Image (tube, rainbow, N blue to C red):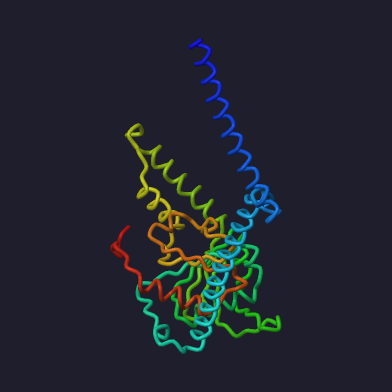
Length: 293
């Protein structure tokens, strides 16, 4: 009898707990139903939350892109305005360039852009006006060698005029533009120079007594290049006009301590940009001796 009474009380407590659980669930269901009636799109909003997050991130990306584009355009506008003022000599700090350390200036031009004769010759006039003494011109295919002809200058209407005092040495690919000496190089000059220097080093090795102990160094290669007459001076500054930020195959043995600056495409060259590049070079600190070999 006691056991039956115990089971009855246990079943009663279990039924009571189940009833309270059902009441809580029913109350929650009624609450949710009431909310759904008040806001029918509530459930859809929960399912659309990832889409809203993607939309917000997309808007933020567009905003950042617009801000960067705005500051980029502002920087280009500032640069163009500064170049315009420099061309009219309205900025005092760019009027007198100190070019004492710029003994040799190198200019690399992409061969496709070097075919624009008017641009190239305008560039040469600017360098002559600035006061460059020694100019080293380079393009891969040798277009500049064919373009620069003795005693001929092209006017703005495309007709040749004899306005420049140009004396050329076609054998050495060198010429003089007024007071500026010009040297023209191409990739063939580099290949020929390496071949001649290698032959000289090989003949030196064959004539040496200690053939097994010979080890060629950079200094040996430099002396060999000078011995065959293809060493040439090393430019202090190299200006690159082309599609990319690289020297387009300019002889590497002449770039040991050279400062390289990318100037953009030749089509968009500006006089003020050249003056700014030369000014920045004159302000740089170089921690090596001038007479290092």
